[in-house]
Length: 182
Image (cartoon, rainbow, N blue to C red; front, side, top):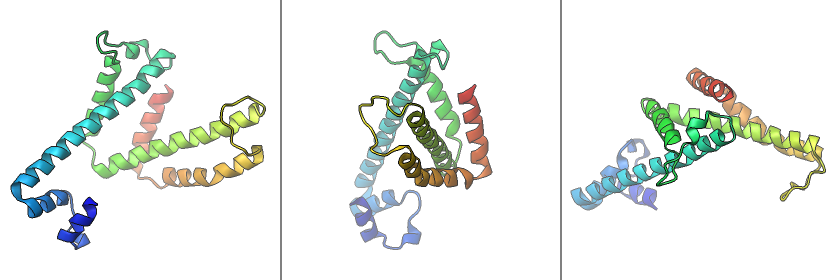
């Protein structure tokens, strides 16, 4: 809906750049709506950052609990129950990424997403091959060969994304991968 309103005010797509929604708010409602829009965007961004920080720190915390990361990352605040050491580490990592341009961040995020998707599919096929009769609460209704064929299209897409990325993404992804394996 907001895009339709925006295009009703600024209909030329080439004029759409960073900050266009702020300009549309200013045109439609003056400085008051523009300020309200800015405040809402800022609050939304802070909320999104807090959510991201909370969820990623729980992953770090869980990894520390099972021994794949140092135990210090499992330290929780007694009052709130939040894994504060993991949150500090993740906040520091996020702060270092803030210097990167948006396109680089998006490409690195997609690289890691595709890598984890490849690992999930390979794990699925491997588990089905090693334990075909294992009792599961949810089962994909395909045989081993059917399951392998079903994983080919998404794996091809993931490998395309992994292979077509820029050299910078390969470096950042390689460092992240090496850190996660170490």
